[in-house]
Structure formats: structure tokens, C-alpha cells
Image 1 (cartoon, rainbow, N blue to C red):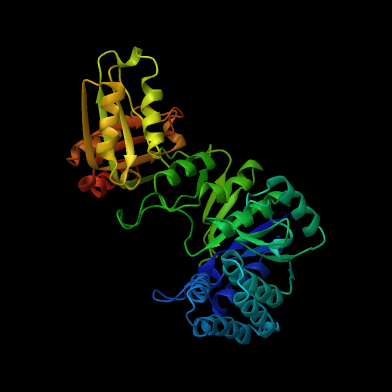
Image 2: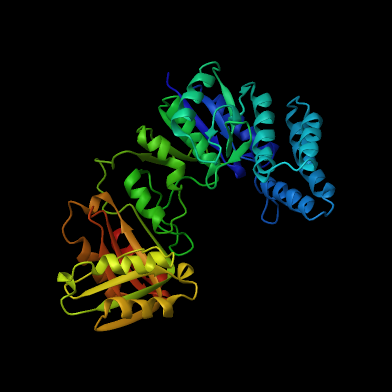
Length: 437
């Protein structure tokens, strides 16, 4: 018998029907000892997430606008779940306390965290599990910085007292007890922290999709699912825009070499995607996935003797740093270097940057290309295969796609190509068909 930590996202806990599915999943697997839950998400397209409604209450109070009607909507949703599940929890007492704290000027972090808090209490009662408040284990210092070691110790100490428990995700507390939320992927991070501290055999992340797909289904029709992927491959795809778990959300499990299984609450029979420390050695798959994003600008710089000029790249990076702009990619040649920048980061600064490059670096020529898209083809199987680049470039040529930039990471696990925005979808389809179809 092992230990599993299961995290259920907003869509998986949106209403009583979804929570009943959770109970069926947990009762079918006695290894699930610790359950982390999000706040209720949307039940249908035009619905509101509970967390958004809680933030709205806080905003109304700050602007001296009546908030009671919104707060009642929140209460009604939780009451409906309680009635349907017969969870037997005194929600009125909880609502009264939250409302009182709202009117006393409670922080936005406290208000936002109450969706997870209330949902965890409800689900713990329904499952017959213990409720353990994340605020008693997830630690931040007085400046709001996460305290990793203290958190790991606190989780071990507290959960060792509970054979089975439900924990709210998304938040913890500062040393003085003030509630502090994570900035992004909060509930996923909580689940990974619990899995690490309790030395889980598997961290299951339950959502509304059956794992990851090899390409965006809005571009490629019925792309194949990814059964197994390594942390490194996942990071490459995530960085290039794939809608996968954020690095912060998997880091605690990754450093402890705990596999993460992405599962579908609505289709628990599907195996989902397993994220492991190492690539699947038994797979004959060449690539793991294709991901990309539009709207980049490339600044191409030419200067004779550039490769031997000391400090050139440092000065170039300094110019961008002074303008608070990150470099996405930096492909280079003997006398050329190109910097790839996200258009959102440029924010009208392009002319100023060009002028500064000309003043400090005195290049022979500068050319800019906007409306560029970057596409990453990722896979550990590319390492030992010959002809991968040829296959990719031939596929794009046959599709009539002009490659404006090529960049390959030192790991040789990915090939990134720059194409025009208008060719983005066509390029992804061509790459997918060349390697997968």
C-alpha cells in the first residue's frame, strides 16, 4: 500500500455532482490519503468562479459599494452543495465570520482564500476525512516570501497526526498568522508541497482534461494524447505557451522525484499523462509535443568582427535590462546576433532600444521583424535520431512556410523556429503531420 496525494481543481469541485465524482474516485483507491481542493470553479460557460466573486466583494467594500448581493450568491452556492451532499457542516457560522472580517477590512488574500477554505471543510465532512487548514502548515515570512524548509517540516509534523485529510489549496499564512496566497497555480503548488513532504508515491492532479495533448486541439484536429513526459520536456512545452502546469506548481514534486499524474475527474478510467523525472526509455516516439506563441519581435544586428568584440553581448543585454525587457532567445552567428522579444514586453520601447543599440554598440546594420511567431518541437526522442531537423524543415518547406529564425537548445531536446504570425497554424499542422500522422 502506497501514499497518493490527489488535488482537485476548480472544475472538479464546481458543484455537488462533481464532488460526488470525487468521492467515487477516492473510494475506489484506498491509497489516496491526502486531498487538496480548489475553490469552486465555473459550472457552465457564463458562470462565475467563487474566487472571482470573493475578490469582487472586497472591491465593492473598498469603493463603498453594496456587496451583500454578491456575497449572498457565494453563500447560496455553498449552501446548495451542502444540502445536496448532506455534509452536515455549520456554514452559517463560517459565513458570518467571513462577512465580519470583510467589514473589518480583511486583506484581499484572506478574502480570496475563503473559497478553498469553505470547500475543503465541506468536502472533508462529506468524505469523512479530517480537515487541516493550510494556514497551519504553508509558511511565508513577514514580507510574504515562501519559506520552503519551514513549510516542509510543518506539513510533516501536522499530517503525521492524520491518516486521511482534506487540505485547502492556494494559500498559507505568515508567521503572525496573516493569510497569504500564492501568486499563480496556487492549489497545484499546495498539492505538490504535500506530496513532497509526505513522500508520496504519486501526486495526482485531477482536472477536466485527460492529460496533455501533443498539439493544440484548436489547431490540430484530434491530436494524440501524451501518455508519459519528463519534467524537462514539460518545462520546454510550458515555456513556449502550452497550457500545462506552471513550473512553480511542479517544482516541489520534481525535486523529490515524485511522478505527477494528470487525470480527468469526468473520465476517471482514462490513464491521463504521467510526468516523470526521466523520459520514457521504452517509447519509440520522436517528439513529445509541439507548442508555440505569436507576437514576437526580432531585432537582427550585424557588425563585422562581432564575435571577437569583448562585452558586446553583455552591453546588449544591459540595454534590454535597463528597459525591463527579458530576452526570449538569442541566436547568433560570426558577425550577427538576433534578440527575440515578446511584443507585450516591448510596450512602445522599440525605437528607444534601437537608438541605444546604435549609440552603444555601433552596429553595421540593424533590422527588425515584427509579427513573428515561435514554435517549439520538443522531445527527448530527438536526441538519438538522425534527420529530425531535415524532417521538420522539409515539412515546413512543403507547406510553403518561410522560416525566419532557427534556434536549438544545448540539450538538443527542442528545435525552435520563427515564422510569420500568418503561418503559425499552418506550420504547427505541418510539423505534427510530419512526425505524428
